[in-house]
Image: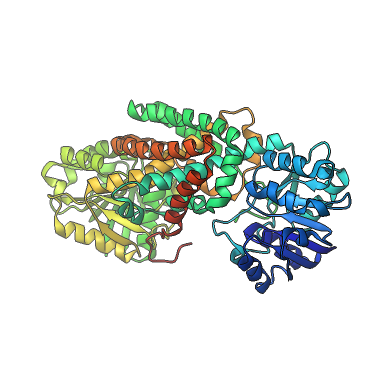
Length: 292
Length: 292
């Protein structure tokens, strides 16, 4: 049981975590802070948090679990704002989509207290941002990646893992480096491409005609293009080296398809599509609950 | 009421059309032919067709509506196989995803009887090909694009439009050129990119680790990558000029994102993502039934 959750960032991810804890009966009191006072107030009105904190530091005061749910570029300033209340007894977690930069910020600011920080990334989201879309079931059946470093205390990792498991999530532990490489490939690059796809259409005179004709394939392919701009700006920049590496693999594969198409080479093209199609058909999302 | 449907190609698209007609009570008898005799037999066992025809020509004999549901590259040879039974009384429709090449083939082979051919493209599909996945509701609430040419008889277009409307589809008429440009943008390019995305990951040593970590965003983004290789080989080649045009727009947008990321320019990057995100958030699929 958590006596008091200190939630910094009351948006979709943080708000959903608070609601999930409440639904599971795992928290007595949620003290929340968001950069925008209207968000904090809204979170309280919606019952996502119980008490509005006037600052990040005051959200931490008295909390036995602190969750940072801010855009990744805001991590360092958030650590700076709270470091005076971080002690060896603290338990701090984030929910950021990239891990190396977040951990570097934690090392720089928290110094020896970095041992209290458990870097976490729940693999869940929605294209609708903000506390109004917070959802107690967002993390149910989803994977949560923890990326502790050498100095992270095993006991802290254990506590965080227990909490996620109690929420119905599937916990996996890996290095921050392996995490960032994998998510560049399976999340960050797909978002970047979906943004480019939309912008490529919007740049054309017939954009609205084209869009009015699009069907279910387009709907699913571009769903992630509606993601939150400030959140994804930070993620793409924060993981840019891995992302640009993944771009090379993508461009090579795209070029191979383009070459087969330009040359009207149906055999080469079919072989390339077959590889992709089999690869995708054999893939199943790791999840506890059945695929929805 | 259709006395006899002649179905050439008993796969997902053709099979679903036959099932939809049957469900709506709009057809008395379906005579079907597929290139592979085992598919034709399977279609009969599943009740998708009532009678197996031993050739495309025999599927046409006695039919008041003929539907070509074959990969687009097989259109010309199919027209050749049936042309001896095509008369001014015939009504022929296809369901191909590209229209200009299909129409060119119809002109070449059918000559003056091209007036009986109504080019059609229902905007529906599944990543599971074959008659086993045929579904009477595949076209319900979906758009169906008709692309008649000058020589197409208005009365034939009218009949085809009535049939689709009776099946619960939403009929739209446009030129083959406008159709092919639009679907290069909103369907063919997304498929090509989804194939490239999968192949780019599969080319890497850690492919299976990466894939095991992918979540719901990846699931939706890559769904169309599992599409049927021979169908999509034909579509991409058949519409290659428009497709390669669309590639230019996409690459320009992708390059703009890449530049902002490489230069660590959060403002430029956020503006680009904002454009994409707003464009996608404001888009709604044209459909009669509510979005599923």
